[in-house]
Image 1 (tube, rainbow, N blue to C red):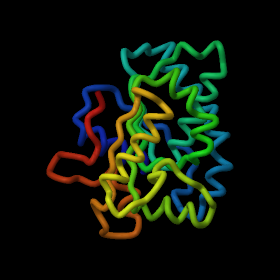
Image 2: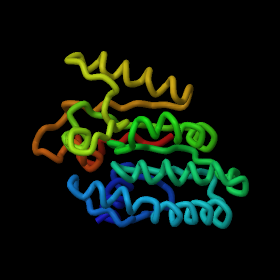
Image 3: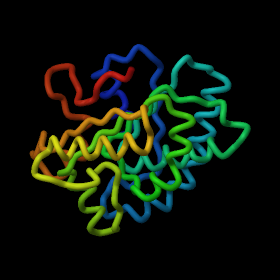
Image 4: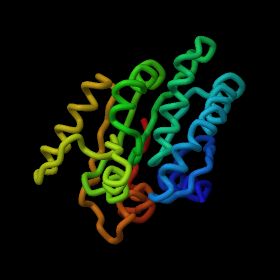
Length: 210
């Protein structure tokens, strides 16, 4: 299914580039969160090896990563590993896009910032106050996801400003924030899968990477 999603995103964005899917062993279920978290360390090494191979053998002018949900945590862990390995620090990512990132705020603040600061030129984060999957994860597993605003207010503009200031403080000069709160309420999971929603023919909710 991830290959289909990747193809849909590439087509919607009309990307003139080679597109590659990294498919890891996710159960794609909110109730499978604990199992997925245990699977992530096993997948991290494979993602690190893939990024290293692309960087050293293909040598593309730009590398852009788009990650969704728990995949964002996987990317953060892979970048942390790359950052901590002196032989791998040469890898640079032009742009990383996190959509509905299911990565814990404490981990982001304490562990992931140095790698993102050093290895990524630009980071775009899609957040939503009404992402039911992330809200349920916070209720069931006490995960304060960075895909949710740090604070919630009825004024969504204020919400977005507060969230942007939080991220800008963590990674100065690197952040673009897209707040998609309240844009769709068709079903329980719709917001969490918003990256596939087309707002008009041939267009995706994603913006073209720089």
